[in-house]
Length: 195
Image (cartoon, rainbow, N blue to C red):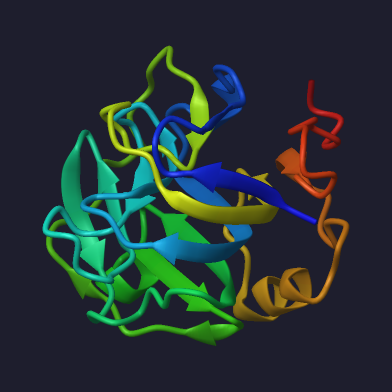
């Protein structure tokens, strides 16, 4: 089971999770079934502080943004429609190189990224909600299904990201700030214990 989003006005609002404000390390992981491609569909955002979406022109790329500005992007065609894929986006804003600053894993495989600009170090802080399946403007919604959302204020290794892909419950609980399985098709309860 998963939560099914209609692409019109469906989203999950997890509230203002202060633990992800002003951090240098962040990992967000989830399963995604992308139904219909739109322009600048959002998958995870915290206002304009940090998020990942498609390109503004609707290209099938996973991109990262902060302060509403594009920072990295994958190759076109990375986002595929009509299949389940596991995504893990790993951020270390203090990294010494582009490869160290952002890593994106799809189904356990590390993707080649193009860095447009480095992310703010640390990430911006704002009093807005962590939301899924909505872009950072709050006006564009993604059409698809999402399940097993996990968020850490930590930089997961490639091995840890792969382990999480194969684990229903978070295998790593240190620095876990959000664990919402979305698996009953109706609710988005947080089981992380972080409050």
